[in-house]
Image (cartoon, rainbow over all chains, first blue to last red; front, side, top):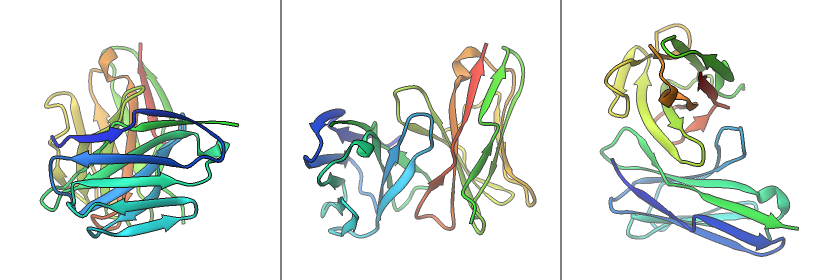
Length: 111
Length: 112
C-alpha cells in the first residue's frame, strides 16, 4: 500500500510555542486530511484540503496542500496544553478508494 | 446530528470465539470504512463499503474477517475464531461521498 511518512514522530514543546509537522508521500494525492486523536478516543477531523497549494485555517491550526501534491503541512500556533495528542495525516489518491494514514506525530505541551 | 456510533466500545473474547463489531454511520452518509489500530501505531485500512456493496476489501485478512453494510441497519465487522493477534482498536468512519472521513469512538477488542 501507499506509504505516508509523517514527521517528526514526537515533539515536546513549551506552552505558547508554535508547532509544525508534515506528511510526505511517494504518490500524488488529491485530498489531504489532518486528524487529532486523544488516548482512548477516535480521530477527530481538524482540516480537509482538496486543491494543490490550498491553505486552510481552523482557529490556531493552519494546513497546506503541497504544490507537488505529494506533501502536506500542519501548523499550530501558540500551543496550549489541550493540544496534546497524536496528529495524523491522511491522503486519498485520485484512483484509490481508501485513505492512507501517516504514522502520527505525538505532541506534548509543557505548561 | 449524531456522529458515527460504534458498539460495543469494549469487547473481550477468548481465543476461538467470534467478535461482531457494529457501526452506524452519520445520518446521510452512505460510505463506511473500517480501520484497525494497534497501540502506538497508525490506522490501517481494512475495508470500504457502500450500502449492500463491498467496494474495496484489500486491507482485510483473507480468512476469518468479513464485513457487510446491509440496506437496513448498521455495518458489521465480523471476526471468526479470534486469535490474540486480533486484539486491537477497530475504528469505523463514514463519509457522505469520498472526501472526508468522520470516525467513531472505536471498538477495543481484547482476546484472552
